[in-house]
Image (cartoon, rainbow, N blue to C red):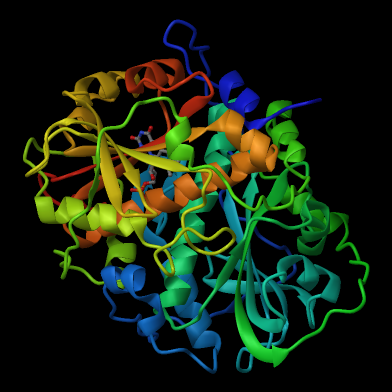
Length: 507
Ligand SMILES: Cc1cc2nc3c(=O)[nH]c(=O)nc-3n(C[C@H](O)[C@H](O)[C@H](O)COP(=O)(O)O)c2cc1C
């Protein structure tokens, strides 16, 4: 079936007058933990590991200033996972304890898994591992060096053997159980959230890293041993080493077998949502990178006012380190009608503009050009209420319309009226027709995962500055586009409400 990002997004829109009832099948709730029976996870070093004491502002503004780590070891790997994907809060439910994680996830359904291939990490045996979040440990799936053919897929940017190669996957049914066809949006957004945590963790620990969303889906899924109808790799992030490497041969990847593939099944009764599989499959083809890409911001529809440069803020009003912000991060909804300070808002927007060198570069850790960022200002010191667009490349913003839009947007967000009290709504937008034209259906992955990345970045910046933040993936799509005056090819992809809160709620 022919499909595209725009067609999928449109087919999965929420419509106020046509919301199909859906009852959760609690008896067949998916498991949020993947376990490899018979492969005992090797525990990573625990409590004695010290997390780095670095400000998020430094990681975002000047990542190259962090001293390079020359000899990664299991303690370092342990820190990476603590700062990326760890259990950080417990809630008691009738059915037992439930653990929240260091990353936000739509509906706390946690579709994402992480695998890592290691090469020369202290005493750790080289190999491909699955990270078990429940054990904070690694299950060895393939001993030895990663097949070179797989390396080749992930290594178009330089020719050294990576010491660490991380693979982020999503298990479809975990989110589809609740969100059905719409769940692919959340697979991508959630994977983007996790990817941002990973990039920041590696950066904080002195491991320069390269991200790619472009790889041969089939080969990488085979390498990981997942059932690609149920679980798929969405991004790869590697920390290059210093050993030169020249790929010459393409090796076949030996399948890991059905016992491994079957572990991508997470419930005794899974419902198949073909739209999810089809839109993912449609993105399998890689379109060669265009030499130049028009700025998506100019293709959304709204007519922009004059561009103004953002104030540079130094230092940011942070009270927590990056590591503390990761461990304490929560979705916070207790917004109060107090203005967000001009300094905090400037810091948040500067943070969204930050890339490795301040300029958007495809395939690296900066903002992918498929995504545009907007802003609804409700209550912010020094800012008129209104709808603005942000240009990360020049760190500038332009007014689209003056006015108070927060209440209307809160209604559009399925009447989640508490979002109206936030100081701002950060809007992640794209012209999906243009994205399809430039990158083919895979472009939808780029735009949505980048939106997820920026969402997680906002969560962490807000936490570090004592503000609240909550991602919002539930909205009436057509109403949102109409409120913002987007053209028929453009859509709201994701939203994050940020602002002062009553107090820090803990779980
Ligand atoms: C993609 C995405 C969409 C979300 N959408 C909503 C939403 O519409 N409403 C809401 O209250 N929370 C939303 N959340 C927040 C999640 O419910 C929250 O992350 C999850 O319950 C885990 O809790 P925690 O963030 O406090 O760890 C969303 C989070 C993500 C990552």
